[in-house]
Length: 408
Image 1 (cartoon, one colour):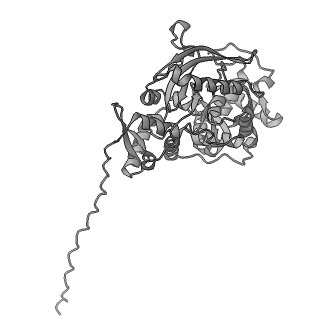
Image 2: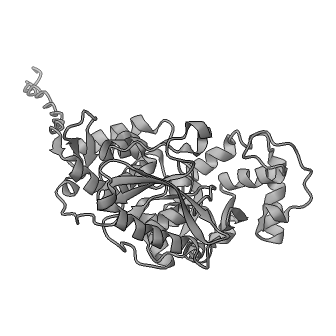
Image 3: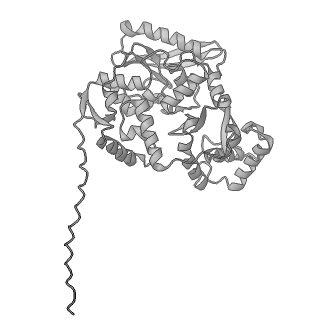
């Protein structure tokens, strides 16, 4: 019997190749004027309106949340930078408002950004991974502290409650090995436990910090889940876009080691998706900045206010940006020898409208209750007949804040 005939199977059709999605070419940078760049920057910093955040402890939380963080500094020739930065945006600000936000409402906490700063508690999870890194690889300032010393100070706080370094009286004092060190070994242990997340600064009186167990302070059962590296980069970019308006990879990852290439890649990804657009500032050869399309066309109030700015204010802290947008190169001369200072030990820039017009070397004479103008320098378009009256009025307001009843 002959074998049955089998119909040959149809030849399989080759699978269709999936077309790779076309990458959207980055558009040519939109050109804006320096004045428009300043307006976008100042609006993002909330310096174009008088009371953008209201008043009281809630205003502190809103301002810190919008800016992303408020830098803390120890110099008190005039009011310390964290109080000064908040006052600039909250005219009715009182130092007690920050104390309530930190210790009562617990809407802000202290941690390291590019420097020690107040940060919104809502953002705590973006710092948990760094806390774990500090525990695994301590900073050089306290690398030789030792786990036993850290465990002792944490156990003492767990048993006795929150304490300051002044409460520790049984240390054997040692010689300092750098200018910011303490002679008390326990201070290093407190700092190590703080940076590793075991302790939090529960309150601050001047520069005297009270340490508490992190979980006990916030009433948490466990630490928030650490954000991933991708989430941290996205958080930093979002923070920069919100508070800077126009960003670069450098400004979004400001002074964070190794972050610049990560941020550049993220910016390019967002640009390909159409969520960011490049911007060039007319008359400059600066690399493109980036912003959201809606920010580029936003209507912004014309700045008409005068502010005495802290040298640690974000508008001044980003030195390259200040020079590019305002044509003003700020040098923090406190770190220079006296003979090399041009403007003075603690010079504060003055913003009038959308221009930096003066640089004032100020000092608070707390015994007499007077704000001393040790030197007054006109810069940029600053002129006595145009700006002096407004600056004098701003100085009067600033002096009233300096010497208010709750001043420290």
